[in-house]
Length: 390
Image 1 (cartoon, rainbow, N blue to C red):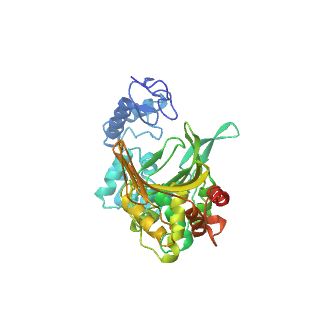
Image 2: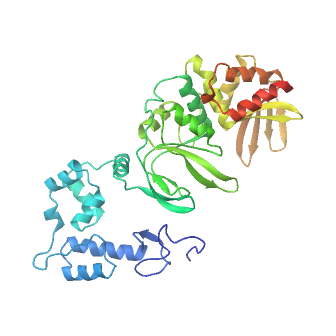
Image 3: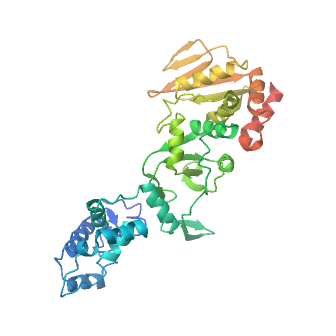
């Protein structure tokens, strides 16, 4: 049974041919059954098994492919004869037409054009190259509510410093730390149904309830890509920065990041002058500062024991030490060090917890001689106000 609580497809409530919703949407307003029937019919056309009269009737009735054109009744139109290797190279390689554009002109399917590319040993474009070409030609769009009205917004070409993660600097270390804590690397197709846009390459995605830190990251990376505002019930909305760039993805992988990194991430090697900026970025992502019994407490959470152990080691170098480690597993507790370990439904989480004079040491370690563009102001203000209670 179809799900009556949502639309059958993004643009259609039912199949434009049979008017039913029993079968899922496949493409161009057609259900799976009608789409497959049309696919078989269009393949017969370029093989010369259907007359031009039948094609014209199907087109006029509204059931045919929108790019269909009449075929001569005296001589059947043969795609393979017209779309020679020379013609295909000119249209696909030189002119930069897409497979779908060529298919529309030749009255055949996109799959058949791809088959000819392989036959003539013409290298198809990568998903990233095809997407960039589609963006330049304003082919990718989504609907967005602007001033109470739904308007079509075309995806544009965005700019970013692609060398940002190739060399270490305080700015790079801070952003990398934030991505280590709160970023998500993805490979292949990434779909966000809330913003109705997709990306077919690899990249990194960062989401936050407050756009402040995302705007600062954009500024540090010389990025002009717009933030997407996506629904995130029951919290309301989230702001999403989706950097779909395969070169940047490869740089982040070299620095130790991987998809599904939470439990396996390791502390990267870096110059000594970048360590505190990296940890500050991590803290802005997964750390917190709050009051407990009217006393300020700073804590940091991670799913990787090795990663958080490295942070503890770095903090110990500036004199930040805690008296005990609390390991919590179900209802049992053991005390022996500066970390706290929680296990919930088979998943473990480790966190650092500190207070007293350590708060002041951590504040100066994080923020001395650091511009406002490299920290989350909300946490900075809480840290600063907590110094009065130490």
